[in-house]
Every structure is written in structure tokens, then in C-alpha cells.
Image (cartoon, rainbow, N blue to C red; front, top):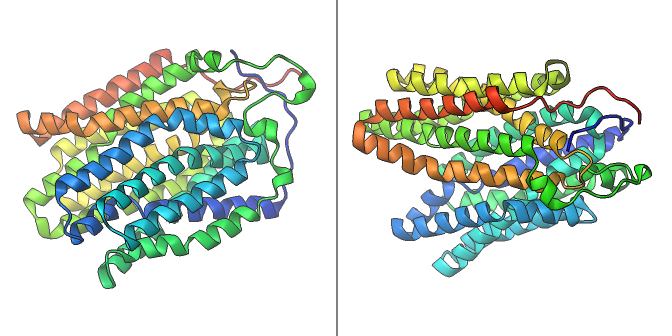
Length: 411
């Protein structure tokens, strides 16, 4: 299945485009309410680490298993905007469950609900974006999405961290719920009539009257599978890298560990906000493959530097490379999926395939890094992660084709 070009550009209104901007921004805020704050809050509620681990593991398993079904649900939906709204409401119900009744069955149910909502929310945002602007302008649109998401993540982490520190740990979940209103208002600002349903699913325009492509053909799509394998190796190397830095720094100076990790989280977001629009605007002129090689190449360099650098300031500087990688992948992952599934009508299922591979790599990363650290030491663990990242880079270089559609024959 080769991607094809030629669809005429769409012309969404500035009002809808601004609505998508702010929806992406507030969605990043809402999702930040869950994450590093969950363990802090449940620990403050005198939960055992075993119970906290069960809740987080259950959410992780559901998130992994739900990627492909979640994408299929978005492909089957008649309104991606409605699916996104339901997902936002579900996340906020989950947050309320944490605050209202912090007992194991309720929190476990809330964490599972949040995981299920996240499985459809990401594909729904990408589908709304593609349905608004079409393939003609999706690269630049994804770059803009990445900028607003990055700024939203950074601001939300700062605000929620301050609320949790100055008021109470449960305050971060209250902030999450309060953000429901602007998120839904921003979603409502996107005109439903301007979202092309065929483009949103990655389908051909109806006028072509070609038979639909079966789901099995999408799942066996060679460029998509190669890309999924590359991302599995990437996240196997990447996901444990920053937590491992945190462990090393804590052993050296526990007083500054929290501040350092916060800096390592925030500074890459600044790079993403600055760089992602440039990535989106150059996706056509440079090609997908060249930009992906840049993003993948930054990871093994970062891993090797972490193996030898111990100065806190230099660690933060090295972590800027994560911003380069994140800016590239934030734009290129959905863009390559859109290329590979173009004309199939299963764009969001393709995102689910990629999400599953990403989840597998991320879930194995901590175990791999922990084993290497306990057996050989942190320096060797960073080196092993760098080698894994290099393998992913090599597979990308040697096997991944350029997915950018050739300039068009005919519309």
C-alpha cells in the first residue's frame, strides 16, 4: 500500500484553528494531573508502595492493551470531536475519584478509566487535526500542536507542583478538574462542519470510489511495521534514562534531586516549544526520514553523555537533547502514520499500532535499565541504553523508507 498525494487543501476557519490550539494546550494540562503526582498523593494517604505499584501497573497494562482498540474506536466514530469530549470528561471523573474516595477499589477504577480515556484522546486529537487541515498542511499543524502541548505541559507541571506543595497533594487533582471547563470550551470552538470525516480517518475522498482497504492490510503495512519496530527500540532505550539520572543524582545529593529532575523535565519542553513548528514546516522540504534520523541520533549521544557526566548543570544541558528528540517525534510520529495509512480509512488504528509498540518498549525499559544498573553499575546501564538506541537508529537508517507522498499526479 503506497501513500498517494493529490487531495486538494482544506480551508478551516481561524476560529476552529485557534480552538484546536487551546484544546491541545488544556488537554496537556489535564493529562499532567496524573503522572508523577499520583505516587506522591497516594503516599501522603498512607498507601503502601505495593498498592501504589498495583494501581500504576494496572493503568499501564490497560494503556498498552487499549492502544489498537482505541484507535479503531476513533476510526469508527462518527464524530472525533465527541470522542475527545467524552475522554476529557472521563479523565476528570477519574481525578475526582482520587480526591473524593481515596480507597483502593475506587482509585484502581479511576486509574483504569483514565488509561482507557487516554487510549482514544491522543488519536482523536490527531484525527481532528487531519480532518481540519488535510494531508496538505498536516506537517505544520502537528508542529503547532506540539508547541501548544509542550507549553501546556510545562505550565501545568509548575502550577500543579506549586499547588501540591503550598496547599495539599490532592490540590493537583482539583486543578485538573477545574481545567475541564476551558478544555471543553476550546473543543466546542472547533466547528464540527469543518472536520472532513474522510480525511480524519485517513480515507480517500468519496469521489474516488475505490474499494476500502481491510484492517489486516493496515496492520501488515511494511513501512508502518518498520517504524513501529524502530520506536519500540527507541523507547526501550529512552524511557528509563531520566529516572536513572534521578536515581544517580539522589544517591549523590538527595537535597537537590527533586529540583534537578524538575529542571530536566521543564528545559526540554522549552526546546520542543521552540523547535516543533520548524520541524513541521520542514517535513515536506527535508522529508520525513532525514528529520527522524536527527531525532533518533540525539538519543544515543545523550545516553553516552549521561554515562560520563556528573555535574548537575551539565546534566540539565545534556537533557536538552531530549527536547530535540521530542520535537521531532511529536511531529513525525503521527505524520508518518498519516503517510503510511493514507487512503485506508484506518489512520487512527495505525496510531494504535505505533502506540502499542511504544508501550511495549517503554514498559520493558525500566526493568532492563534496573537490571543493568544492579549488575554492572549506572555508567554501564547508560551505555547499554545508548547501544539499544544506536540499534534503533541503524534499523531506521537501513530499513525505513521515505513516506512523504510524491507530488501529485491528479486530485
